Image (cartoon, rainbow, N blue to C red; front, top):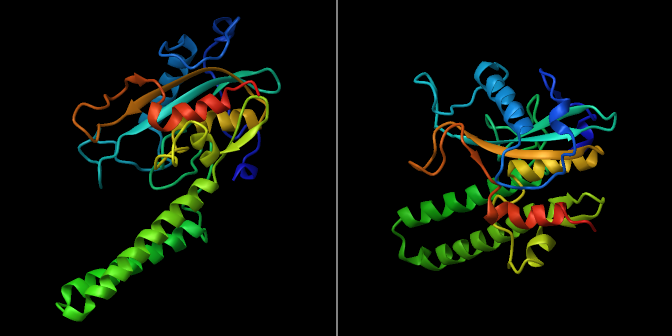
Length: 257
């Protein structure tokens, strides 16, 4: 999906003078939030409060419709190929049911694209589940073997579909080298990547920057909205990239070779 975006599609310029804050800044992933990231995050949060481009229920308003889904957002301060200072923004997973929104970098892989294999695969899984449910509710003693066969087919199909999804993710490092998601996690001792790996904000931001020859300067992620678990995430608070899904990917992306 990278080809759909020209260099400045997601590049945001700061609304205030900030060049002095970028002097001698060397990129690293730390728990310390650089002042430039705080400014970028504040500008993004103002946009989230005022935008009318899409509707997503973060749980911050009594008028919200549908399920409450808080989101992790990320900002990456960069210097582009014209040596201009600015920042990129990303969200984890999908936002408002989609992957592509103005002001945000695109996903590594767009699983909800029309005509994609994922939609067809999920349709097939739904059909299998429907058939299993119908047999289970039919009270037919002769259907036990068929149900077992369908459940085995469902498991096989689900594993194959997940593997095919993982195969779509390839990550560039800062020197231009590329590795697949599967290779990255296997080299870290995992049997397979965890579900949702590659969908977090930090890898999206670095991928976009590296593809467009932008120099990363500082990274920060913050939670926006109510937490799906009572005290897991707090609205507006900053958090380091997650270890389960991001650590292995970021280790590759920031490697010198």
